[in-house]
Image (cartoon, rainbow, N blue to C red):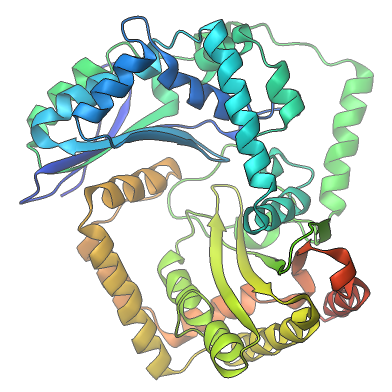
Length: 470
């Protein structure tokens, strides 16, 4: 059973007790990520997340590490484009200690100047690591380009120059402006009694302040005429961008909620980055539904059938039948204001053109003909089985509940999700395929050694796709 309620300070809680479990997963999700930053402070959300573990008013970094180890060594954090989260999992009897620890990290971080200097070096090493990973780089560069006019395209880690320049005072101001009860969500799942958990949460997060005093307390700045003109110019450019994302995926497709900000424009793009590596990494992106889209159950089956599994069209035809590429798969990047459907390929450079031509063939066939009833049954069973297996984990349930609660959509039990999957038919999947798999809107990013690949040929193929009928 799912519970949704608010603590006395206005902090929302999503809770899902699970029978016969001896563990509990807890996550605190804050609605702030790289999309809420500016070019001048891009990376601050991620740096704040790192600094949570560097000491509070009552615990040193070593004491935090010792407690984390004692309750199971499964406490961590992450930053995404849309949220920052602290989470952990422990046995039921130690849940109170976990909740108190997360509450302390969130409400009383010290942001010690010496620790900040050290952690900046760690974050900059992390940025280097990402740029040395072509499988990560190909995804990040593509999203940066297609959302170029919107902060949704910002890199989560930020840039080394910005991270290096961030000051302690900026982190403190950022924390107070965004880390308040109305901008946060607690998600918990596992083996426990609801009333006991509610009492523990009330105590652990009592110090989370209720409103956004910092944001509302600042005086609104009057825009000068030249500032207004600049805003109008940017908005006009966004309107002329082809295609505007919201025209196809926002209107009337979300269940309950909706983003308070306008959706970004999608810019069809061709991106190349040189890396002196043997293999070529390619990533295609298509505009796709948001995280809160009501068709998400059909979408999961569509992805499984097209490229998200070993028995999908992409994998079977490109790897198994043709032996063209070792790694080829599809996946979704769904956000509250937008979404992308990706095809990721790692291939020998000399086969890049042939593989993309094969992808073109598979895309056109799937978008025109959809899938058979036999394929629907197979992939429906696969998605349902994966859902049931994932639902055995408190951490998976905690994370999934938070994901959709943050998007403002209705939450469903496992049984309800299975019922929705069960009624998906070929027509629904076919409709999504036609809507998403349009090569005229495909963006392409290529990461590899320039001298080993026919970039002119790839661009020519991509340009030909763009001339196809929308």
